[in-house]
Image (cartoon, rainbow, N blue to C red; front, side):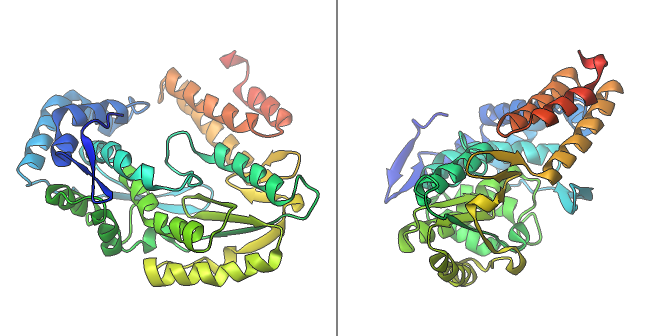
Length: 350
């Protein structure tokens, strides 16, 4: 990513002309190229592709004149495995989301703590789970002492994000009024909180919870802390210390971010009992794929096989999905699951 057009001003990062960079035809076209990958069979993408050059130029002109307005969302539910409300923006708006994301990422990512793992380059679930194991070895003195793990998450996180607080946090690092106008248009396009489907929601979530991360690292001085989106884990050999942290974290969330810990999802376990985190159950000497994760993986795999046979998705899209599943399995003890994947694929795919 190109950072030559950025400079530090008053401790924050301000682009020489960030708004022009975001709305440039080059950036919008690049965002379109990235967005459409793996979506070649989607009807809305097919329709947009037919006149994408004209549509993107029109989008550019609307943004330039500041007459752009975000279109309404298409709302539906998916079961994965629990019922989730999904709000899907139009293709045009999602292309703009990508164009915004790539520029905001350059500005904000460097301010995030090392152990924030969601929606960041060279991070992700596998690195977060491996970091958990590394921290457990340190906190437990290479398994010679008990290591306790506090695990919690934030209640209705995306629904509960306060849009005004989010804008105030963004203003700490961005002073360009045109950019702030555009980000306000994106954020306020949703009635309350943030929609799960927007790629911009990923960077906005990290900006929002970076306040919690900084409080935990700088004020509470917690050494062994990992966050993936709204899932938090803290490790220590002292269980009483972990119990004392719970009200401190919850109070900070309530007072500063209008959030709260989910009361039914706070638990402290010994590491050797197994820690269920991000789809894996981690033990001192091995990791297992969570049972529910395995079941969900096979449901999705069977659906993808059916779509591929009916030519609803391309071969490259199918194999990309398959590789992601093998990637999940290689990070844990999963020989039997790997055999089940091969069995599910059948001879047709070999």
